[in-house]
Length: 123
Length: 111
Image (cartoon, rainbow over all chains, first blue to last red; front, side, top):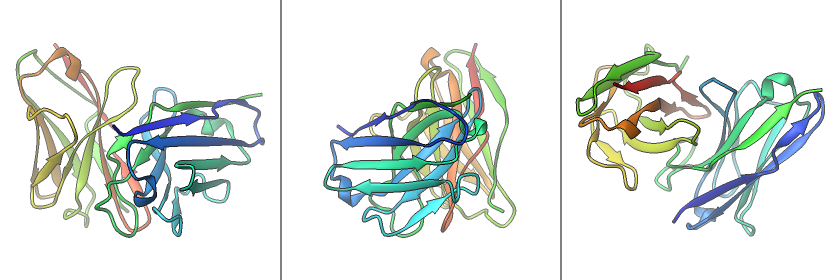
């Protein structure tokens, strides 16, 4: 069965960096686009970034553009988000999610979700 | 600007039906959406994709109590035979060439 397991969350000071990982299993990872989505405490879902199956195209929300970088290693079945210059408003649970294989080009919706990793930005 | 609008809350009785609404912004009425459920203290779960022709494809293991429909720019999620575990937040999602958008979510209370 499809499994997405996030790791790397924790407490970090404002201005510092953190990298989250999402290990995928149960499907042919290299054939699927992937997303990162976050949820601030008590708030709704907010899209963060997406990456194509081959890593050739990446898309970002305006709120993280220039600070966050999405990447993937298809040999390790893992997608990452490198988060730099972190701010208090980046505090959230970060979910990785899979895009359906039927999607081609651009972004897409999510058909499987991980359980999330909590990132707290605080001094 | 691509925006999804949802009512903040809804409620219905155990065993009844409820219809949740997601409205696409002006000029985007032909967009497909996806519905997701988030039970308390859990991660989201994909329910279905709802295309602009009204057809929908439920996710793995999603019971047929969950169905989708459309009317113009409105996208609906109907849950029939409500059960206590249906309580939670429901989000709609859409996407464009280089953007993904979520609605603000509807909190469903099962009475």
